[in-house]
Length: 322
Length: 246
Image (cartoon, rainbow over all chains, first blue to last red; front, side):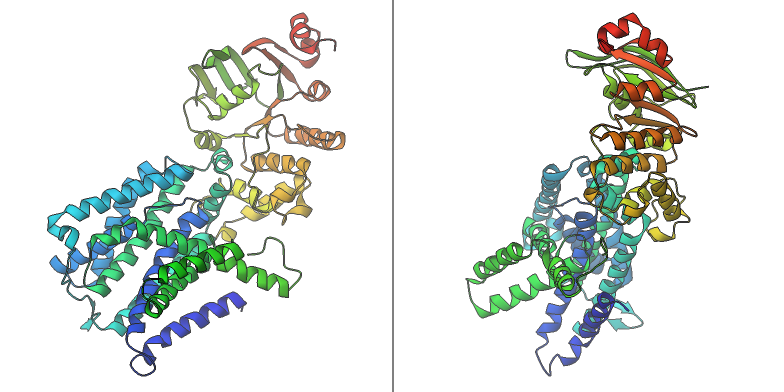
């Protein structure tokens, strides 16, 4: 078994153990923090499919995150508490959003794509921020707890944590499968040289639109899980700072590696939490310095750092090996 | 049999008439060369055929089907592959992956999000065979950007070939190559032409004369002559506008 797979299993095993110590070794709060880490890990898997593999940097993924959260909130409040139906609805809504926004945004590339996705996300933000039915700027409180079926409520933090962990692991497995698939290879080809891919006969626009939708579904399901956890949604879930934060996680982790951005998500959330509890107002300043240092010392992110450490130990790696 | 038929083709960029009412047929099974001075419209012609740009007027018919106005990927899937004047490959991917992606486009599950790329029946094997054919088998695992200029150009030819085209457009395949590399490329093109129709833009006159079954001479967006290489070489107008003292 490869070292990568072993460390993956170790990480999942540790995550499985996390709720067991809650209330004994540490407070319940860490389970809530764990859910937040898993939510953003899921978000980043989808973000990396688009940014890292297909080469499209979106600055508007908060539109999916927010839409997923609001879709879940509305479903729970007015339709059903079944988490399966809620997540299915979230997927459907985000496929529609991704297809419509992707249809327009995928015409542009690079900075223009960044700007278009940002503009679309701001449109969503402003729309929800003034939509009275969902509480406008005040948000939507009092969302009922979701249920798993067979009388199991996800109101219990540990149960929700395990459910979120299962979704994240499944999401990771699907993403791995995607990047290994023939479609995944074509996306990498388009990232490397879109014109070449087109002249070989690949409909790059269609491939990229699909990637945009898939990536949006990940962000949407992540948003839904956050809404289920918090019992409250607000327009800030649509705010551009979320789009910026995931981009930061992506860069810190190492683009196009899946595991890297997931680690980036965990790092940013845990570090932000630790620093903000240690110091009052200066924590953002310290965090900024840490980010700058990370990018300066390992421009290819955590994934690049791990690769370098491994290469220095084993002087003869196969060229081009992952 | 006429594989490709251009009729009254016209394309201008602002006030510049790049292609000025061109009629031209490419016969199947031959090597046809397009020659002409710089700015004659040769690469524009390739761009029009391959769908990189669209014509202002006129038609492009490939195997009895009008292809003008189709996007490049659709034209490629119909069986027209092209190389570029400036090497156009996937620089960060290995030589094998470059060719593998080209073979994959014809595979039944080319865009399957579930089927692992390695499991597409025979794609890797075919890619290896094409790599061997252009003499790059030994470099299969090297990132394309680390190959020599000549090898990169051969890799691009391998990629176009790997899509299984009926018509291959080669835009100055020997540009920037050493004499030895040029000879290798020439032999390769002759070999390829045994089962693929080749349309080639080339500046190396010696190569054109030895390689081509048919030559078309362009100047200022127009066809000024066409015919067998030796006939064209003796044409007075061709000598005046292009060949000079040859």
